[in-house]
Length: 131
Image 1 (spheres, rainbow, N blue to C red):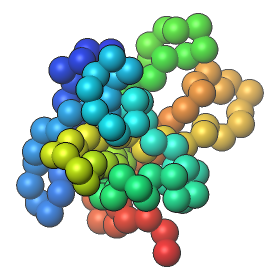
Image 2 (cartoon, rainbow, N blue to C red; image 1 turned 60 degrees about the vertical axis):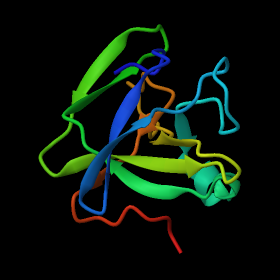
Image 3 (tube, rainbow, N blue to C red; image 1 turned 30 degrees about the vertical axis):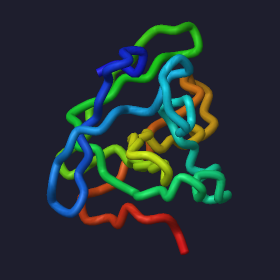
């Protein structure tokens, strides 16, 4: 599933159940939730997402794709027991609910080719924000 598709959904694992939720919001889509598909980890820790009543979730996937600075896609496999970290945001005055992929800034390396990187968590790792 590509974010550019306005009908993009992602599977979300929450309390042992898998449900499909809309992946973020595009600029031309109706709604009040942020117009993006990603939530930077530092913005979550900084409280920016609090007004959207965030719920941490795990996104089950076999692999994911990130584009490099030149726009070329590169696929990366997840290992057994790994999930992509997600955040479900909710608008309290409507039924709007969407999932956003939690991202990190990649560690600086000589071969760094991506501006962001999805946060990968293990099966037994809690997906809640730090206290």
